[in-house]
Length: 344
Image 1: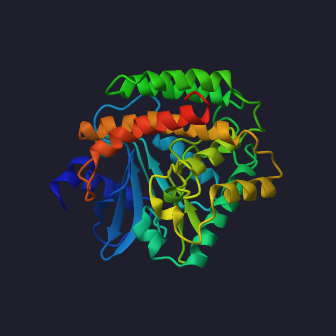
Image 2: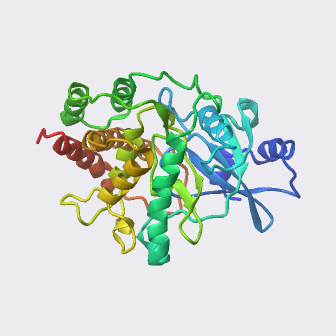
C-alpha cells in the first residue's frame, strides 16, 4: 500500500468498519480509481477480487454543501427497488473517528465506464447504439420515479430549481475561482432573466452523462453513479447536461469532453432528445436554454475542480492531468453558454 493511500484511508479502522457490515475474508486493500474530479473513489479488494467501492470527500478545505456523502448514499439506497440501476449500498459512516471524514461503501458492480474514445473504440457499433438508447431509457426511468414513494419527498424544495441552482453555483464560483471572469456572472444573470416555465418536478441526477454510468459489454446501463449533485428539480436540466457532455460531430460547435460519442453507432444529440421526448411525452422546446444552463454550471464546477487540483486535494492520480486544459475549459464552457443564450 502506498503512503498516499494511507493518508486518506485509515486502513485498519475502515476495514474493521466494513467487516461489521459485510462478510470479508482477510485484509482489504484500497486503490484510488483515477478519473474522479470531485469525491475520491477507491476500489476495495479482498485478495484478487474487487468486492466493494468506497467514496469519500477530497482532502483539505471543502466548499459549503459540497461533497455530501450522506446525500449520495441516501439517493442510491432509496432507488434500490426502482427501475434505475444502482449499486447495492453496504453502509454510510459519519463517525469521523473512523476515517476523519464521512464515507460510504457500496458493492462493486462489474461493468465498463466509457471515459474516453479509447474505451469506446473497444465496443462495436451495435453496443454504441444500445449505449445511447439505454442512457436515455435510464434517464426516463429516473424521471418517472415517484419521489414520495421512494422516500425522497423531503430531499429538496420542489420549486425554484433554476433560481436555487444559479444561487448555489454562483456562490461556489466565488468561493473557488482562481481568476476574474465577468462572463460567468453575466451568464448567471441571463439565465434568471430567460428562465422558462418549469416542467413537473422529478429527481434530477445533476451530473448525468456517459462516464457517470457503467454499461455491460452490450452497451446496456448496469449502474448509475456519482449522485453528489442530485436534487429535486427540472428534468430538462438532466437532459441538457447529458447533451452538454455529448460530443456530436454534426454540431457546428462540438461540446463534448471526449470524442468517444462521435464514433459510428452513437446517436447524435437530436436523436437523443427526440427519444427522450417520445418516451416521456414531453415538450423539449426549452432544451437550448438548459444546454446553456448545463454549460454555465459545468464552468463553475470545473473551476472548483481546477482549484482543488492546484491545491493538491485530489490525491495522487495514475492518469496524467492537463491543468492547462482544465483551466481553459472553464472559459470555453462559459462562452458556449453565452453563445447558446444569444449573448455573443
